[in-house]
Length: 152
Image (cartoon, rainbow, N blue to C red; front, side):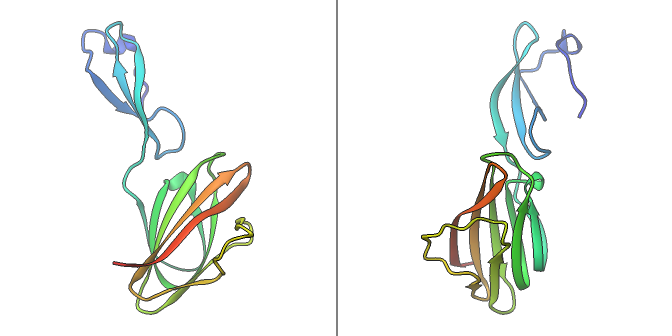
């Protein structure tokens, strides 16, 4: 995306300009053009629609750079890992079991709570969904929540 300077906007000062300011390719900032031509942020980190990964099975790595919300259909059992992202970034993942019950497991690099009642792998009933949330702390992705058996 090209960068606009205040002098390029002189004489043609719109009230709002949307553009990529910082962060990953899917993080956007809404900018206001002030009367003096300077730009100021009025909102940020507006995420686009969830990234549709399509059908997945086997070992899969979710790339946080692709977006904060991602969804997929499991056509086989799935083992998930997460890559990229900055400290405190979150990734929300929605997985739907297709045609049969499917299992979801997490790669060993993802930290799981030691006092959790969740036992991996978890089984997702055919035709139902599972919502998983991860957060990155330092260099480690952690499981924050997992809710399964949503009827779709």
